[in-house]
Length: 239
Image (cartoon, rainbow, N blue to C red):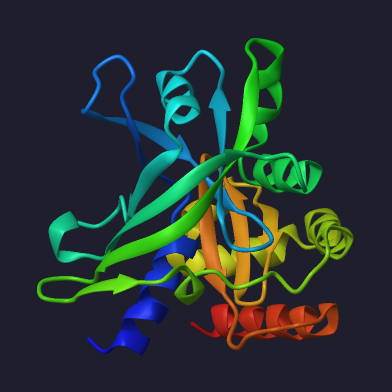
């Protein structure tokens, strides 16, 4: 696998995943890594965002040492070792700048998280990628730099929120069509909602999962998003 192919496959995998194993440096057992399963989404700069409870062990750990790794992989794969996986080495930091935008993006991906703050203290943290280890299958092993995976979202928070509201209010059936190739007729029992839009595609929340639907080509404006969604609907209906 060439470096450009690895870059594209690694980015596609990152965009297709919405949870992973966060490893932190244990405070309780110094020298040992501590793994926790965490949901995540990407912020407007393509960096992973996680929500951490103040009482969580990994919260204590990142306060003491912000160096972490996040491993992501396709949970649905029959053979995990034969499929792609990513280990993201990163520095974790509590989000202050852009907190409202990051929180709203996260809540659209994980709406149940809105109520978490009522029971415990929670904080949003950003993982600033330092280096990425990508394994695309047997013998396909690459180290990648953050720039290979992080692509700025071309849409402002207001533009994205407008597109999200429009799709969720008027185009639920279209989103079912986008997911039909993945879910078959089971999608008829779900009410999907648009979670996010970026240059390469959309994330749709359906049931308990988040699904990635890629555009036929990259977009940079709301008009191009509309054209891409129309093209996606045509392709899905024809398949």
